[in-house]
Length: 123
Image (cartoon, rainbow, N blue to C red):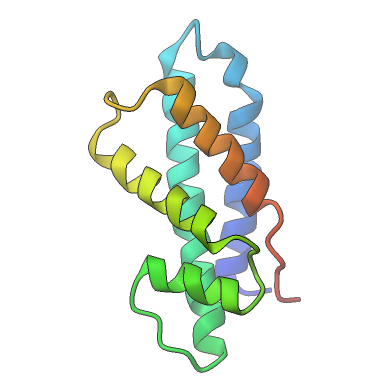
């Protein structure tokens, strides 16, 4: 198993753990921020894993969006448009934590977790 796949798998586990604590969000915003950061880390490792897989296939990958599109072509993920939306939401949150409603963003993170958990790893 490659370093990027190990990091991605670990970040998926950390995101799962963060989401298990979502019931604490109402009493302490710190838990929401932990979920957000876990999501950001996980999506970062995901596109880097996609990039590595693309390079292994002899493809040039210059951006996270290209990496996601390549992951779709390689059959690593099923829904490229959904993943591009996750990336856009992540980019928006990095610049405006307080402007995105928590419920809406949490839904995005939960949907992302469902999708990232389906990744077909190269064994």
